[in-house]
Length: 77
Image 1 (cartoon, helix red, strand yellow):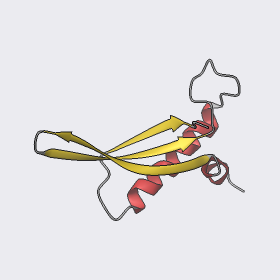
Image 2: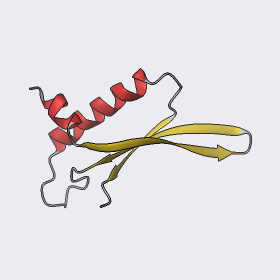
Image 3: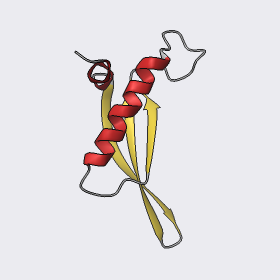
Image 4: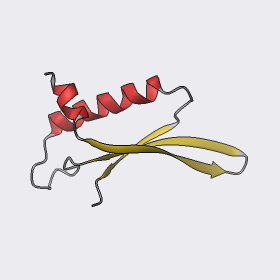
C-alpha cells in the first residue's frame, strides 16, 4: 500500500461549505482527519500529512463542480 493510500485512510468524512462575499460564492471542500495537524501535537507526521494533502487535492480535482478552497480540520468526536 502506498503512503498516499494510507493517508487517505485518515479521512474521517468530508463535506462542502459555501463562503458568500457579496455576489461571489466560493465552494470549500472541508476534510476531517484523525491526523495530528500541528507540529507540537503528539503523533505529528509531516510526511503523512503531505500525503493526505495530495489525496485531498486529487479529490477536489475529481469533483464535478469547481472547488475554490480546501480546509483540513481535526476530527471532532
